[in-house]
Image (tube, rainbow, N blue to C red; front, side, top):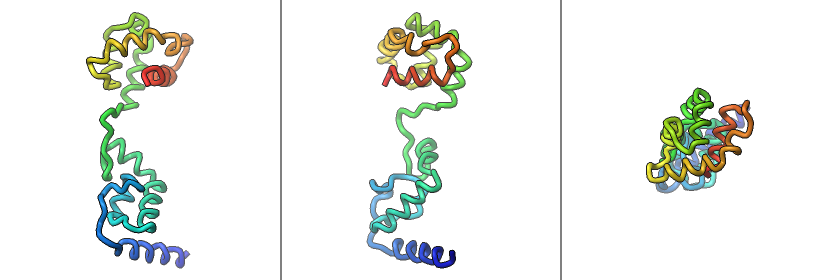
Length: 154
């Protein structure tokens, strides 16, 4: 075990002593803790170590959703938790609004999904036209409704 740790430490030192620094977000390793720890990703070894750090610690996902660790939060970020809570709490009234092609709950859903105001009429119409796909049974769960809505608008 000591030999493995020494080899990793030596690899880190050799990799970090490489040539001039490249851009912070290396296209090979992306963002995450690995891209912060191994800033000079100009060797295969440092890129492998950065990617391994990102993958092993699963910090890239956190960085993307939080906008940290050299990651940028996506412009179309949707809070899944808020969306799930909203749909679960409004299943019946949301179904009525979707069937009608408009309404207060459908507007709130569009807000949560960050649908631009100019695209709302098309969004409402698309959901209305696909009501049977979104609510195929009376006992459907909120998660399945969300998945169906995302499938319809994608």
